[in-house]
Amino acid sequence: MREPLLDVKDLSVSFSSGGRTIEAVRNVSFHIHKGEILALVGESGSGKSVSALSVLRLLPYPAASHPSGEILFDGENLMEANEKQLRQVRGNRISMIFQEPMNALNPLHKVERQIGEILQIHKGLTAEDAHSETLELLKKVGIQDPEQKMKSYPHQLSGGQRQRVIIAMALANRPDLLIADEPTTALDVTVQAQILELLKELQKEFGMAVLFITHDLAVVRKYANRVCVMTQGEIVERGDTDEIFTAPQHSYTQHLLHAAPKGEPRPVPVQAAKVISANDLRVWFPIKRGVLRRTVDHVRAVNDVSLQLRAGETLGIVGESGSGKTTLGLALLRLLSSTGSIDFNSVNISNLTNKQMRPLRQDLQIVFQDPFGSLSPRMSVGSIISEGLRLHKLLPDDRAERRALIETALQEVGLEGESQDRFPHEFSGGQRQRIAIARAIALKPKFIMLDEPTSALDMSVQAQIVDLLRDLQVQYELSYLFISHDLKVVRAMAHNIIVLKDGFVVESGTADQIYNSPQTDYTKALMKSAFDLETLPGAA
Image 1: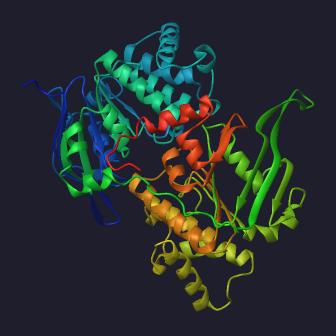
Image 2: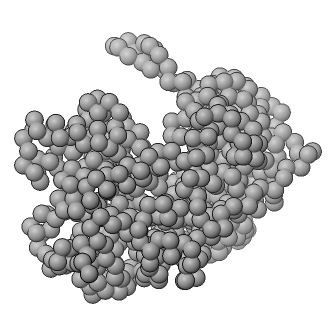
Image 3: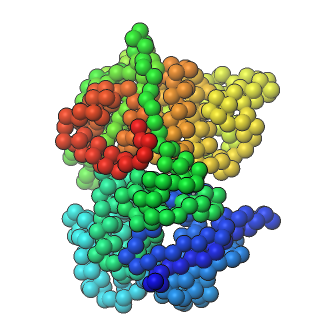
């Protein structure tokens, strides 16, 4: 039997902080052969990324330690390697693709410098040769107009383009092993499918081994040869991909396989009142150039969009990044300037001043995509939830009454009332999103814009948040504008759907119409990208 390229044996990882020691990974073992794709699957906090970072010894030492284990790469134990030996392996024989491409790229350097630096350091290429090689790499990963893009800064590229640049950097030295840590989580469905196909093609071309880390089982089934399932720092099941999906043995694996959001929203009562509507809504951003900053053109973010939402109804807004989804939502909330008319509770709010809009903010709320970024790290949960109540003069003077009110808001979203004394960093991603929802719900609004509220969450947590939002909608007759690129989640939430592309409505209708009989090529492409991956047993 051939020797594996990577053989991790009995690996344990501990973190020491404030006199406490936390066991993040316990006695984990797995191996990968050349040319093979192994998926390490599990929810946030299961130990997937910690195990992968251990391979390259990238954990924050000395806070991190390894009570046990060996990491054999091509027969050499990396646990015993010195810094010089590790530098020869990192980025040369083992490369890594990180989850968030914007954080992985240096915002101060252009693409050419970031890729060229790798080639010059590891391969000793001249600047001229590095330029040519960088151009070829960008072509290979499917970057359009690579000559222009290599002169761009990361912020000037789309999410999919940034991820392709990261892949080019990882492949610059033709590594033997590629570690891909959630490489498609933040991407649109069509871009996700493109990136996965690209990785598969490059893996075959270079004969690389790939350690693929993800919580998305639909992706795993299509691309991995073998699977290891992790939870609470341990591998609880392993095997060939087909075996894991057709006959899972462990209860946790079975739970993951059936964790996708299911069901559909409750029907909207026929007599439900209209809450918010817009006619010919347009948001154009001026492009100004020259010394006098004259307007020479416009970015046409939203173009003549009309919509209507009733009490207890969810309108799904879908489309790729840059299609105008979030801009449309912010314009509806009067957080961006727009033309056209917006009616809220039968009152035209299009031309109201900020001061006139302030009393209406209680009824118009928003839940953002990133639950950590949207919560102040310096405020307790109780302070975060009470802030809006205080501003709208809804907070009782009596301290006991205030705590009781916040406790009720937390309990409504499935959290304990005592949580109000803790801070956001003490909660998981799903719990933080529940806090963000509690902050909005506490004001008893009529309309909530939900901007990608589940995209940063694990599949099972997504299902919990979807169930919570549907329950709250029925309880309070809430109207939701649900913005997402995840069509599986939208299907479980939306009564009606608008498909946006480049700021234009390309298709609209009931959820059944859009999902079962899409009319435009763009909508069909979105559906194909999303549901080609949806091959899980028990999928709705």
